[in-house]
Amino acid sequence: MYKLYGMRDSGNCYKVRLLLNHLDLPCENIATDILQGETRTDEFLALNPNGKVPLLICPDGRPLAESNAILTYLAEGTDYLPEDSYEGALVFQWLFFEQYSHERFIATNRFWMHLERSAATHRAQIEANHGPGLAALGVMNDHLAERDFFVGDRYSIADIALYAYTHVADEGGYDLSVFPHVRRWIADVAQQPRHQLMSA
Amino acid sequence: MYKLYGMRDSGNCYKVRLLLNHLDLPCENIATDILQGETRTDEFLALNPNGKVPLLICPDGRPLAESNAILTYLAEGTDYLPEDSYEGALVFQWLFFEQYSHERFIATNRFWMHLERSAATHRAQIEANHGPGLAALGVMNDHLAERDFFVGDRYSIADIALYAYTHVADEGGYDLSVFPHVRRWIADVAQQPRHQLMSA
Image 1 (cartoon, helix red, strand yellow):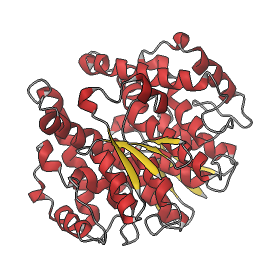
Image 2 (cartoon, rainbow over the protein chains, first blue to last red; image 1 turned 45 degrees about the vertical axis):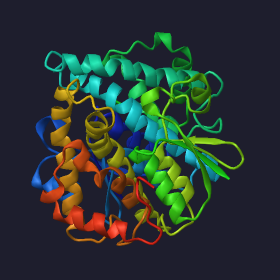
Image 3 (cartoon, one colour; image 1 turned 135 degrees about the horizontal axis):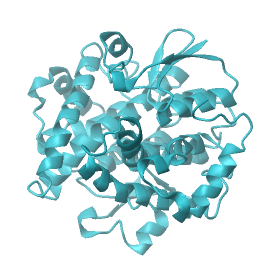
């Protein structure tokens, strides 16, 4: 069985739980609290020297880090990663967009405002992040104006990765009412078979 | 033939040029200067709405963005991306590590200090980035203490992606002399057949 070191309120960890549920793969969840320093212990750093969750332990004991690498590994050969090499590359394009142009602004502000509740300490960074976060949501909104899902008009790990922090972007101070296509897509993702809530 | 919109001094663009050269794939380079706003024109945004280089145009005219997605696309089925699915996943793990834990601290500081020459304006951010950048180099150094290359003891796109900004990290204020295994690996990467300098 897979083991997943993760934190319930982390979108990066949620992505992996969501895909595991879609694939009906059983997994032991090991609660790992970032706020309590549980990713910085010697024991955890021996498994992931970069000190981050999610961390997947494969049934044979081998570890794999980075949420979007885990999605790619689990999705290979399934309906959640297109076989066509250009469409597959577009999925990767959106996975890298998510980590570089989206998560670091939207998830980071949510972390300070909603999880760590340290907004006062990080006010300047929160303000600096807000514009780039809006820009990322704008790119998504324009893309979704003409398509149901991010790649090939089919739900894929590109959608799963982007959904994780977008559907709770309000917790990072982002008003989604100005992004109607993103809101329509969020509703569509939640209607997928075997969808699971972040809080589940 | 491929076309590549890129900027010579950008490590993200260099990654793609380096892999194209390894694969002996001819490519038309279209110089696109970030500092002159050339990624924010209507013409460019029509090709990449996220407004970033590198941007690859495939021989059939289809565009692909995000440096590490481009590497993945070009490397598929070659010696630069392991066939084994776990080793392939480890390559992705390092590609996401590169964008999330490395590039945003090391490349960003190099951009301000070396390319834009705006260090005075960004002093606080440069200082805030320095620690996480050192941490990323430390993770790399520890990993390379026991291996020749990042995954499977074989040169892959994980090495190409990480080499691009690591070998010029001094231009972002990082002293590599304290990371001897990283320095050994940099020398080994430069010895690979068909290696090409960033300035080429």
